[in-house]
Length: 124
Image (cartoon, rainbow, N blue to C red; front, side):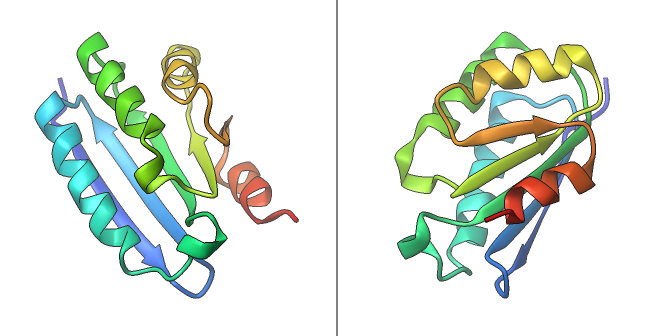
Protein backbone atom coordinates (compact mmCIF):
# COMPACT_ATOMS: atom_id res chain seq x y z
CA UNK A 1 0.00 0.00 0.00
CA UNK A 2 1.08 3.55 -0.70
CA UNK A 3 2.29 5.57 2.27
CA UNK A 4 0.10 8.46 3.43
CA UNK A 5 1.06 11.89 2.12
CA UNK A 6 -0.66 15.26 2.28
CA UNK A 7 -0.14 18.91 1.45
CA UNK A 8 -1.95 21.91 2.92
CA UNK A 9 -1.85 25.30 1.18
CA UNK A 10 -3.54 28.42 2.52
CA UNK A 11 -4.74 31.42 0.49
CA UNK A 12 -5.67 34.13 3.02
CA UNK A 13 -6.93 36.47 0.28
CA UNK A 14 -10.01 34.28 -0.24
CA UNK A 15 -9.99 32.31 3.07
CA UNK A 16 -9.24 29.10 1.17
CA UNK A 17 -7.44 26.00 2.38
CA UNK A 18 -6.37 23.57 -0.35
CA UNK A 19 -5.58 20.05 0.78
CA UNK A 20 -4.31 17.12 -1.27
CA UNK A 21 -4.19 13.66 0.29
CA UNK A 22 -2.81 10.44 -1.15
CA UNK A 23 -2.11 6.91 0.02
CA UNK A 24 -3.24 4.78 2.92
CA UNK A 25 -3.52 6.58 6.28
CA UNK A 26 -3.04 5.24 9.79
CA UNK A 27 -4.73 6.81 12.81
CA UNK A 28 -1.32 8.40 13.59
CA UNK A 29 -1.25 9.95 10.09
CA UNK A 30 -4.73 11.39 10.66
CA UNK A 31 -3.60 12.92 13.96
CA UNK A 32 -0.55 14.49 12.26
CA UNK A 33 -2.76 15.85 9.46
CA UNK A 34 -5.21 17.33 11.97
CA UNK A 35 -2.44 19.14 13.80
CA UNK A 36 -1.06 20.65 10.59
CA UNK A 37 -4.53 21.61 9.35
CA UNK A 38 -5.36 23.41 12.59
CA UNK A 39 -2.03 25.26 12.28
CA UNK A 40 -2.97 26.29 8.74
CA UNK A 41 -6.37 27.54 9.93
CA UNK A 42 -4.62 29.89 12.36
CA UNK A 43 -3.10 31.70 9.37
CA UNK A 44 -6.57 32.85 8.34
CA UNK A 45 -8.79 35.58 9.78
CA UNK A 46 -12.19 34.14 8.85
CA UNK A 47 -13.40 32.59 12.11
CA UNK A 48 -16.10 35.28 12.35
CA UNK A 49 -17.40 34.13 8.95
CA UNK A 50 -17.77 30.52 10.07
CA UNK A 51 -14.31 29.33 9.13
CA UNK A 52 -12.45 28.88 5.86
CA UNK A 53 -13.49 27.42 2.56
CA UNK A 54 -11.76 24.06 2.22
CA UNK A 55 -11.03 22.10 -0.93
CA UNK A 56 -9.74 18.59 -0.28
CA UNK A 57 -8.51 16.56 -3.26
CA UNK A 58 -8.57 12.90 -2.19
CA UNK A 59 -8.45 11.33 -5.66
CA UNK A 60 -5.10 9.73 -4.82
CA UNK A 61 -6.22 8.38 -1.48
CA UNK A 62 -6.60 4.63 -1.04
CA UNK A 63 -9.71 3.06 0.48
CA UNK A 64 -9.14 3.47 4.22
CA UNK A 65 -9.54 1.16 7.22
CA UNK A 66 -12.65 1.45 9.38
CA UNK A 67 -10.53 2.79 12.28
CA UNK A 68 -9.27 5.61 10.08
CA UNK A 69 -12.76 6.38 8.74
CA UNK A 70 -14.06 6.60 12.32
CA UNK A 71 -11.18 8.93 13.27
CA UNK A 72 -11.92 11.16 10.25
CA UNK A 73 -15.60 11.23 11.22
CA UNK A 74 -14.73 12.26 14.78
CA UNK A 75 -12.43 15.00 13.51
CA UNK A 76 -14.96 16.29 10.98
CA UNK A 77 -17.71 16.44 13.60
CA UNK A 78 -15.63 18.59 15.98
CA UNK A 79 -17.10 22.12 15.87
CA UNK A 80 -13.74 23.60 16.92
CA UNK A 81 -12.34 23.55 13.40
CA UNK A 82 -15.27 23.61 11.03
CA UNK A 83 -14.99 24.97 7.53
CA UNK A 84 -17.68 27.29 6.24
CA UNK A 85 -17.84 25.04 3.19
CA UNK A 86 -15.96 21.79 2.72
CA UNK A 87 -15.57 20.30 -0.77
CA UNK A 88 -14.01 16.92 -1.50
CA UNK A 89 -12.87 15.74 -4.93
CA UNK A 90 -12.99 11.95 -5.30
CA UNK A 91 -12.56 9.59 -8.22
CA UNK A 92 -13.92 6.21 -7.12
CA UNK A 93 -17.42 5.20 -6.08
CA UNK A 94 -16.12 3.32 -3.02
CA UNK A 95 -14.11 6.33 -1.83
CA UNK A 96 -17.21 8.49 -2.35
CA UNK A 97 -19.29 6.15 -0.17
CA UNK A 98 -16.68 6.09 2.62
CA UNK A 99 -16.39 9.86 2.52
CA UNK A 100 -20.12 10.45 2.59
CA UNK A 101 -20.33 8.47 5.84
CA UNK A 102 -17.49 10.53 7.36
CA UNK A 103 -19.00 13.92 6.41
CA UNK A 104 -22.53 13.18 7.51
CA UNK A 105 -24.01 16.22 9.25
CA UNK A 106 -21.45 18.69 7.83
CA UNK A 107 -21.87 21.49 5.29
CA UNK A 108 -19.83 19.43 2.85
CA UNK A 109 -20.18 18.10 -0.66
CA UNK A 110 -18.38 15.51 -2.77
CA UNK A 111 -17.43 16.32 -6.39
CA UNK A 112 -15.83 14.50 -9.34
CA UNK A 113 -13.66 17.47 -10.41
CA UNK A 114 -11.75 20.36 -8.81
CA UNK A 115 -13.60 22.82 -11.05
CA UNK A 116 -17.01 21.65 -9.80
CA UNK A 117 -15.79 21.80 -6.19
CA UNK A 118 -14.43 25.35 -6.62
CA UNK A 119 -17.67 26.50 -8.26
CA UNK A 120 -19.64 25.29 -5.24
CA UNK A 121 -17.17 26.74 -2.72
CA UNK A 122 -17.30 30.23 -4.21
CA UNK A 123 -20.96 30.48 -5.16
CA UNK A 124 -23.03 33.02 -3.23
